[in-house]
Length: 200
Length: 200
DNA sequence: AGTAAATGAATGATCGTTCATTCAGTTAAT
DNA sequence: ATTAACTGAATGAACGATCATTCATTTACT
Image: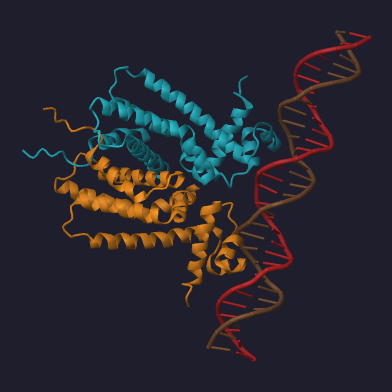
């Protein structure tokens, strides 16, 4: 059938409705209408409204991780840790920058309760931080990165910085390419704010 | 009077109830009960449940900014930009680390809708980022900081990093002092991840 | 015909909010 | 000093609107 799959159609509709009205104000009936199905049909595919949001998260993370893997594969296998970190930053911001509604759901709606946050931080997000950490450890091993830095902490800092860029982008009135933040952010994180002490 | 103020008591109760049950699941009646007043009384002091959350935010930001000002005053007036940034990071994390329930409300509950987020990002948070930015501009002027870095972006990166530390702390099972993250985070942000190119 | 998928009206539980009423405390009058 | 009148803060039962969810019925397909 041409329309991909009813379940997917409902998830797409949910993204739009949640992004626009917020998860709690959004009504299941609106999601159904937008997906072109009846309210009851939603419950043939999802256990509850909560399950809808959680499933949205799961589907997106699965897609994102697949995309991330593919992107890293496409890199020259001899890519340096620096190049790999820059690449991750680009992919991260490009993905969110491509779909504002998805970004709203991810940056805001998914974080509305400790329940969802806990789920979020113990699932694929953990893997994502782990991925960053591994790259950093590599860089430390071959001397490109300072070894006096805790790689787990550095991964969080990088994630926090990218996350803040995404949230700012959503709330900003201005129209700009989120991905364009990747370069300057990584320049700062890699090189540091302090001027190198080259007093001649 | 011994009990500070009825309005304050209600806000304190709201912090606890919102932190525990989440804003949407929390019932106004629970907040009232915890504050030791009747449900209707809440509406003598606040327009609506939303107003309760917003007022909570306003009161806390007012307190935090006052505390931040005082802290900066207490610094030697000749403090370098580096010292000032480190100081801000400490105060930021110390404040959240002192009261986990308040931290939950700030890091999670307040971010549950674009409505609150917008309010958040156009109010005192704007001033806070501006404060960071000013310190960075100072540092660039006297050559301590790289001048090829956009100070506004750097302010966001610093904020994003601290914010991520706070969120991680809330969701972590481990018990640790949030403020202890201030030093390593600022070491990373100031010095950068890359090893200085001193190949002998 | 028989099965599965889909429907959408009806249900029922859940609160935010209101407001008629109470009551403690204050003022005024005798 | 005593009583009466007044005030407005506080109460909490009741209201009413909102939705998530269900399920008896219909539709579509083999």
